Image (cartoon, rainbow, N blue to C red; front, side, top):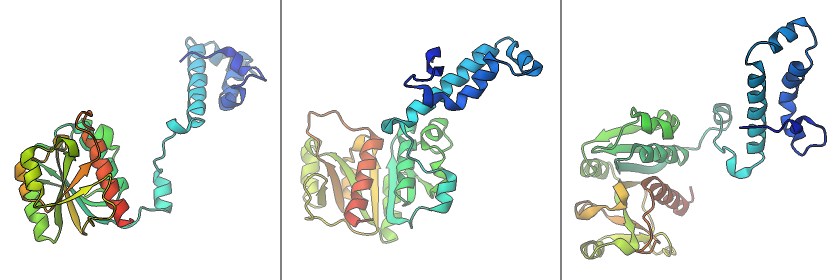
Length: 254
């Protein structure tokens, strides 16, 4: 990042933003003693000071932009104001993209999901790409692995959970799935209007690209569907899953 030296001039519109960097710049330009002069003459010192100035300016400009601010709470803030109690929701995933898994783990942590089941070939948190997007959220979640979604569903049903799945785009449901849907509850996230009440506790089964398939529909008591037209580009797994989890908690008023 290049920096216009004019930002160090009083009256410049960015002058106040580089206040934290001005002492280092002033010491470099006008060394107050012999030791400071020796440091200023070290090869590469000018480049180092310029980089520090650029970093301070970049950070200050980012903090001034709401869309660039990180809204995650710090560890200290979490200790002072911990997350609320876990919600009666378990999420079971069978997706293949590790970045999507990591993003969903972050959502599950933020939404206080009780547990996450990673099924089939779903990448585990030890995968570097999962860690890159989960940002250590896996350390605050109960994560278990199962052979397949069906196995997870059987276990959770025996524990009293109602088994639901994310059934994808309402406009993309094939004829066979439409027939099977008549035997299950369908929660349309655009126009439910309280017609279908999501039960508690609930297990949400989520297959990759939000297409549950006939076998998965057979073991589910209900489906959540998106208000997206058939021609639209499918949402990514992490976005679709995050919307579904948020909608469940919104309906529960949690």
